[in-house]
Image 1 (cartoon, rainbow, N blue to C red):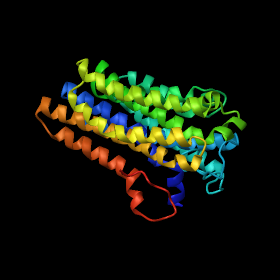
Image 2: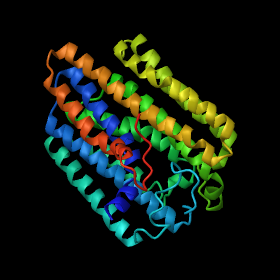
Image 3: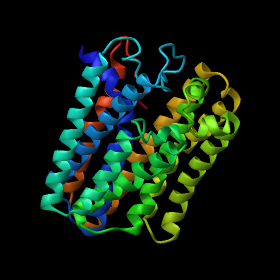
Image 4: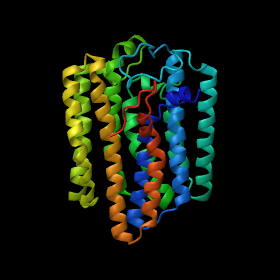
Amino acid sequence: MVKVWWIAFRYHFVPASFLPAILGTVVAWALTGFMNQWFFLLTVLGVTLNHIALNMTDDYFDYHAAVDCPDKRNPYSGGSGTLTRGMIQHKHMRMVFTSFYLLTIIIGLYLCAVQTWWILAFGCLGMGSSYFYTAPPIRYGYRGLGEISQLINFSFTIGMGAFVVQTISFSREAFLVLLPLGFMMFAMIIINEIPDRNHDAAADKNNLVVRFGAEKALWLYGIAMTLAYSTILFAPLMNMASFWIYLAFATLPWTVQAFSILSKNFNEPSLLIPANLLTIRAHHLTGILLIIAYLIQGMQNQREFQPAFFALLFLAAFYLPAVVPVLFKGKLFFPFCF
């Protein structure tokens, strides 16, 4: 049963939430010399719980809208399949994701009380976007707005929210450095929607891939990834970051390879699997390398190592569950390690 719920959590997509949260916190420390490790832990835990709840919310409402198909040829697209295959009862899934949302609210209200009520704005935007992505009556993910929401929430909302938790202030540098993760998240959503476009269209889920078609979606993917790396390129030239962030260009070959596979196989869901995997890898490792870049900058600026150690500890604690299961040869599909 634990394996079934782990499938429902889809934890391999959760780094999209906690990586910008960790990055926002590390940027705050590098720029100000301050890091509250307790607030750091609560922030990362809160966005992680919220993302797991988001994954199950999408499963739940897509199941009731007859969007998810049990016969999937691409394991990176669509939902977890736990509802369509009868592995979990829908009422139990609703109970669990509701509990996770409540825990997230408790964490957010505590941070509001001890830090700033600006956190309430970030929390409402993040949680509201998570729930109403597929929940009626808004269901904005069915109206072609989901991809833009992902770009905003998985960069600015989470990352800047984490920055504000630490500093009770805003930063143009933090905003700029977080943008690449948003652009890459946009691209990840696009490539994951391509195999499901016909089934989504039949269920009136009019996301951008359904609206524009697979060929134009290919270019949306390319533009988003180009903007991600362009932001990384120009940030130091604008004196908005150190040159250490150029470490993130190590993921560029994966992105180029993914685009090449996508351009040749966008009509073949099973052949897109390597491109899906490469996109996830590029997003995750870019986030990790940006975090490392700011840890180096922080140690240079602050001449202390303890906050960097805690940041790496939190990164390992939350990230390893997404990649370690590949070591186990079971029925689950976890090809997410580097």
